Length: 583
View 1 (cartoon, rainbow, N blue to C red):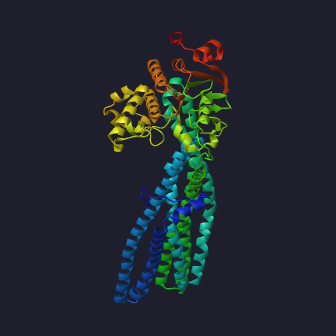
View 2: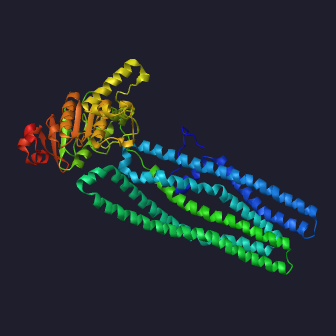
View 3: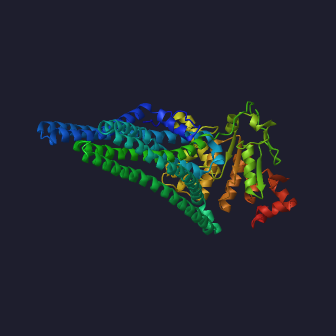
């Protein structure tokens, strides 16, 4: 089974079937062992009626107790050996499924890491969660076909050979009848794929809505929008339930026919064999063996139908995984070096120019417009933005990432201690730890305390039972919204980038804390390039330059007070009750 640190390999993402086959080829010996165990197990099941018929014809009917004991002993031995084979088959196939499960998880996680910041721009969180929670399990289950599926084919052929020795007529009926049963179920499997695909898509939409609700429940409650969103969620969940009923209806028919048709076929063949025995064409022992052979075939046929069902679902899920694996991160075609000295950032599309060493604010009627501009300036979306006169897409991406940091106010916070949550991993930040030596550790502790002070987050550390060593839940759910915002800001400040772009860094803070953060931020970033998106006069009063945006374009630029005096739209957007006090 794949090790936690083993390379999962390069998946074949040319199609769902090719991806499933790739999972098989990554563990060929284990899959071959599963097929062998499954084949021998099913063939020996088919051999049981033969041994029973010999015990009847050679021992019981003529009264030869020695022959009866011999064939009975063989029957017991085969049964015991088959029980062991059944255990080994199940154990091997469990390993096959677990390997496929873990390998797919590693491939999906690796792709998510490779996509990085471009992932949420290409696929919704609900879709990714659905892949990780449901699709992975279904894909691994579909690999059952390499064990019992292969064994069912071998057992079918073995029984056909045994039936020819009893009655060519019965053998012909079985050879033609079993494939006919499988063909009757085939159209339902095609319909199942369509229903399952739609169900998975609706499930992804609903999962995304659940994530949105979980993240914005407090905001919705404050705005009075809980009822509206709850109604939308109820409608989506009802549609998903109805689609689930449709999938369940098709599934029930597949499973019912998989058991019912072979059983009905068993009755027909048994009636035919009984007629032949009554005419004396076959012996009583052969009649018993025919019944046993056909009864044994019920298992392989059921396995075929079940494998078809599992493969149909596996193909649906594999196609979703393949679609995810085909996503590509933003291409890094840049070959030029970044400016050697601090230089201006310019976004021609909006007209925003960020001068080096200054604290610049973007004020927009629609906050999303300002966020979009920062995405372009940080090269997270294609644009004509320049840095020091050079197009950003012509500069090597790793140089941009080392020197320009975009700090989103909803950036992920990963579970761990508070110190691990704040400490940047890699990049241009001060990442020294105690493992780098006492001097480096001391420098890191100083930088960490400075970042916490600038973000006015010391009280958060003091309130926690173990301070910086307190274990935090994912997304810091054990903190308030304002506390999480300050932790995110502290993390960005600790990275100490040359250019810091921040999205609404104080939107969830009270006025007193917001004023403190604004004052400390302007001092801490003195002489370094910083851009904030905000409409808070407490922050704007401490900026060097403000760009007022209308419909994503710069409508006016200047200091906060200049815009208040000259731009009515700006004044109406940022004015608050404490405006006079700020001025």
